[in-house]
Image (cartoon, rainbow, N blue to C red; front, side, top):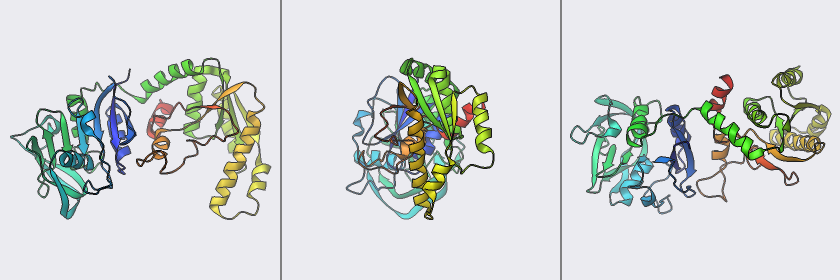
Length: 375
């Protein structure tokens, strides 16, 4: 089974970027809201705590029980995650005298040199972005890195592979941030760096074969990368049992419908082109508000697609080109009742279409999908 790193999300704008950097180091990772964390199993090699727009000093800020990880798995707290570790174990976090935002030079403590900061230059540029700072640390913490204005820029808990950093290694302004992440992933967590999008896709095809068997799948294609790659994966798994529908809504560029349809046919897909310009034009007639137009287009597409899908018999699944950011952005760290946004590919199946959903790309980022498509 694929080894992985779990990222506990506290709502930072950088959380997805942490995941991207981890995967660039050929280590598979998953993002989960701090209050909907999965059970740990043997595939989990470590946990990263993300930053957050919240302050650990606020009463209603996220404060999960970290004892389920500490001492059992390597743990890295980034910014808010570091401050949460410090405060929850008896340290003090206070407002910074000045907001610490921008470049700083990280100095590694020679006496307490840590694996986390090995191979860094003596003064390594890092990126700070926080309004609070760790003022005091518990007795079993040791400072392993400081900047001119931040005494506790990095720490480790004695006797544990538990670390905290008050800078963002995932952004490019932290010039050796990727080295810090590599130190954590490889030398601390023991990850083998064997994951690639291509390897993952091969596993996905085998899983699709097992999941779908001889079932039929219907899928709407847009001409875009996501739906096209998803269709190719399902096609590799079940062949002609995949039924693809490409709708001409009258809003494409000149000759684009015919060109894309021909390309799909060359790929060997079982594809049907549907001319539906008049239905879309009628739905858009008299509308000027962009949001009203978007809803009219979406509603009409569902009507056309549903009509075509019902011409097929014994279809059990709806294929979708959902990618990982769609999934992440549709789940709020505040819980299942609140969402950051609803996405057309996530939870978008109308009630009257009684089909199961299959999403072969739901754990890949856009650039990973493109990398596989280009390979």
